[in-house]
Amino acid sequence: MIEIMFEQLFAGISGARVIAYAADEAVFRQGGPAEAIFQVQEGAVSMVRHLADGSLLTLATASSGETFAEASLFAENYHCDAIARTRSEVLSIPSAALRLRLNDDAVLALGVARFFAGQVRELRTRLEIQRIRSASERVLAWLRWRARGTPPCLEVADAWSRIATELGLTPEALYRALKQLEKAGAIARDGRAIVLPLH
Amino acid sequence: MIEIMFEQLFAGISGARVIAYAADEAVFRQGGPAEAIFQVQEGAVSMVRHLADGSLLTLATASSGETFAEASLFAENYHCDAIARTRSEVLSIPSAALRLRLNDDAVLALGVARFFAGQVRELRTRLEIQRIRSASERVLAWLRWRARGTPPCLEVADAWSRIATELGLTPEALYRALKQLEKAGAIARDGRAIVLPLH
DNA sequence: CGAAACGTTGACCGTTTTCAATTACAGTGG
DNA sequence: CCACTGTAATTGAAAACGGTCAACGTTTCG
Image 1 (cartoon, rainbow over the protein chains, first blue to last red):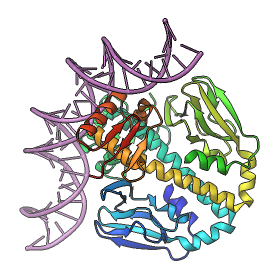
Image 2: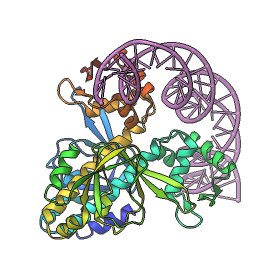
Image 3: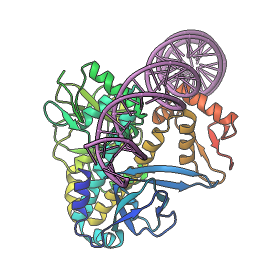
């Protein structure tokens, strides 16, 4: 869903390209000119801020499908480093042309606002799910959030270990939670598909 | 910061008013017409979705200063309930007038986009901090994020117990983490002020 | 003054992490 | 076609950590 919106939004902007980065390579540096807005195609990119005492603080990590450096639409310079965590491919959308158009084109600006509003909603939900302390309740909440249809079900495309990271759990804890939920009848598994029976 | 931006943004919109809600009272209901966008002044309001099987899923909880139902700018109906968790006061900004203006006024639309982009950044960082498992490292990351100046320091305005909630910890765990950080020399405390010594 | 919320500490318990080992599985090259 | 290699999935056991409960001191405010 995010990808589609993102692609639609910026379909009219020329100069988009996909760039590959090695692990630990910088996509951009704090203080550098804010030239583009990005979407991770493959891999993961962390936003890292250099603090006054020389230490580092990770502000965010964007994985496949997620965007980063949206603020480059509104700022002159980047306020953190973007470092590829692993070998990554990143779609880069130049922001200069976009910025120009945004000042005249209310519809485009509104589209951007709408896109960000959607991200806000998604992030809030992820945050709410993160605060659930019990591993299995957290996993169940995540599944219920992602599931579609009647009965609600979903195909898990990513590796479970990656999902464990998104959930703030260790892979082991996730496996155990899934098993427990299955045993309790809260979910049914068939390969990578999960079904949530209606009570 | 969020409050200021929010107030600025919607300063020109008429019909804003503050409404008080009792605990468990609904600000709006899923399916109802999306008539306003809100900011919590006092208390806390949860967004709750009704799922197919009749159960509930909490999507977000907005506390003092935070906004909710931004999506009412883009949708006809609310997609969840908003329920006051405690006695709350909520600033309500009618969205119909706003929607009209947004289609013509690119600057306002861009301001809204910028506002949401800021929220996205903040939420991403909170999410990143939430995944830190160790209580004291989580607290330290939060402090480093919020601290300003040299040496980095911050005044804690809210009650610690509220901050504990924001951090996804119990108050007890937070007190212990603070004590531990202080003993380790990672922070210095003076009443409600926290200083982060430069190494 | 008294009530209510906040702050602080201690002890115990349960869950998750951690570490380690094993199995399944996909891709690769002999 | 099969051994080989790396990654993901799974299970077990022990330790660590934060949650919970309980008690008490402190501050705030009507």
